[in-house]
Image (tube, rainbow, N blue to C red):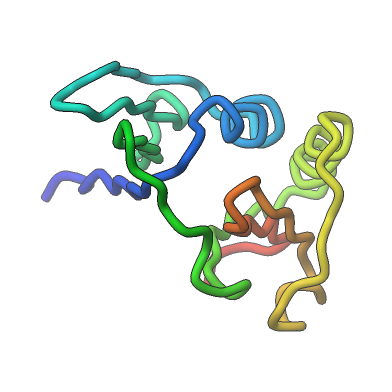
Length: 129
């Protein structure tokens, strides 16, 4: 069986406003982008060779709401202390301040950051079990 690829897709009001968080802060690469595909603009970010990527789209002329709750999370498990600290430092150096997690569980071994749409990403200093 081959490894499936996971795409997490969601709309946004501003791809440009999200880009610094995911590209510069989280260190993801722009894998693909498109403009005016039936009224949609979009960008896909991820890491080459990894079985996941994130797609953000904007439907021209439409407005979307922000995150439905503070508990909508993307969680990156980073068990290596050096890699975890590097990831946290990169976010902070890009001007993204940690926010308290809605669920205190994530604060015990991780740090949570929030993008401009109110969606949250946890950098979890732990291995996936």
